Image 1 (cartoon, rainbow, N blue to C red):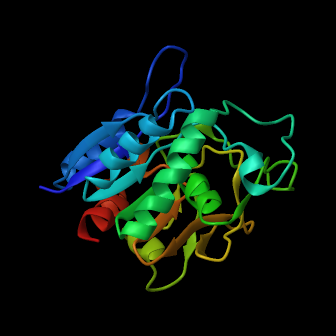
Image 2: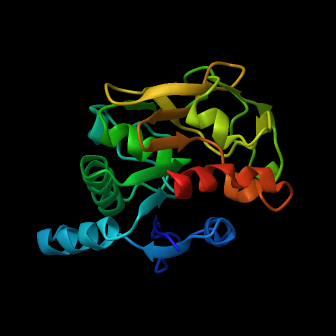
Length: 228
């Protein structure tokens, strides 16, 4: 069975955390999830050990969580930022770059698409409402589709929708510029980028792990990860 590194956060206080939907979805598609939290502090040998653990797996899944510090894409932080974790940012950005350089397949979900984009030279909308995009934070409906998604035919994003046409939406940030190494391949009706990809890399803005309980077609991104 393939081993998938599941990169997780450090919230709430004094806990590491991951929504069990990620774990259950990986088991469901025949993978063994290996939960790897970021190392505390800025200690080079800890980061080296972290990257070694990540790269020892067959694929990597970056999970949801707080906002990426805008310093990583050259912007001044806005007042709307939530739950920034410098240690997690540092570790996951390094992990994405190491995986891409080493040919390890990457799936980024919600925060994961954002970290992946920033790591590969792109930038984010710090707050979608301020950018004129309303209605993307629907936490009360996290287990049901709330808006349509249009994917580029033949893309990994289209494959990751599993034949569905709508997704949930629990985010106030999103990809603004995919950068030089990724291309946008799915969009919401108001033009917000919902997926980016390149060879062996896929990021989706929605939360398939929370939709699976009602529609197992949303296992598709995890199947893509294992197949790739």
